[in-house]
Image (cartoon, rainbow, N blue to C red):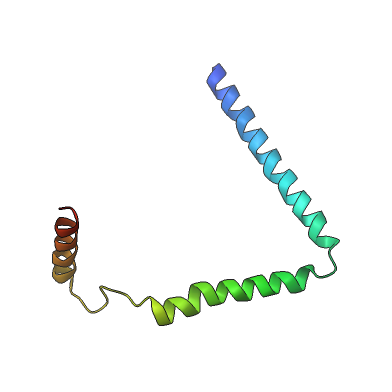
Length: 85
């Protein structure tokens, strides 16, 4: 027999689903009526690509790239103990 907690949980899930649907509808209708919307979203996606992919490749090299598992463990342990003091 379902208890009151199950009913409350299902009602909460229904509200969350309806809220996401309302937000999606709001943005969908808004972007459909925009004249420059697609070009702006293309520009935003290009900028995000540059930020997360190109900068990652050139500026954020993997610190533990050429190390074995034992060397990584030792390095992490040293960093944790030295910075913890």
